[in-house]
Image: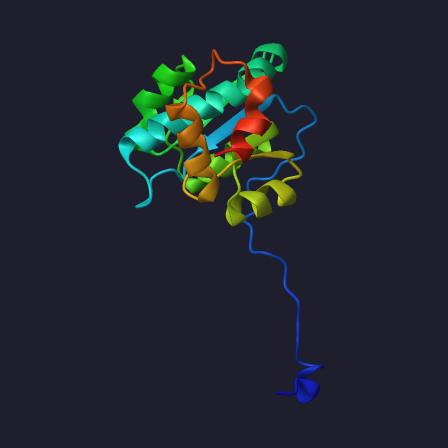
Length: 168
C-alpha cells in the first residue's frame, strides 16, 4: 500500500503526559522507587516478595551511600504496602493515585522503576532521570528465580552475578 496521498495529512504528536503538576522547582530532593505496576497475572505473591528482595539487593549499596540527605519514597500497589515497608525497612511507602504520583515526580531527583511506557514518558516530560529496574514478569525473571534458588541472596558475592546469569 502506498502512503503517497497521505503525506501532507500525517501529523506527529508527542506522548500525552499531564504536565499540570510540573512546577519549576529549583531544588529536587526526592528519590522515588516505584513498584506500582507489580500486580499482574504473571506472578505469584511469593514471586513479588522475591523480586522485592532482589531489587533491595541490587540497590542497597547505592541507597546507603547516596540516599542519605534525600527523601526516599516508595510507590506501590496498596496490597503490597506492608510488605514493602518490611522489606525496605521504611514507613515512606504510599499507594499513590496518578495525580499524587505526578506531584511526587515533580519533586524527584531520580526515579527508580521497572520500564513502563507511561513512567518513561512522564520522567522525560518532567525532566527526571530514570534508573530502569528489570521487569519482574518477563524472561529475566526466571533468571532471578534461578539465582535465588541457587542461594544467591543479598549476602552473596554479587561479583559472580554476570557468570551466574549466563549459566541459568
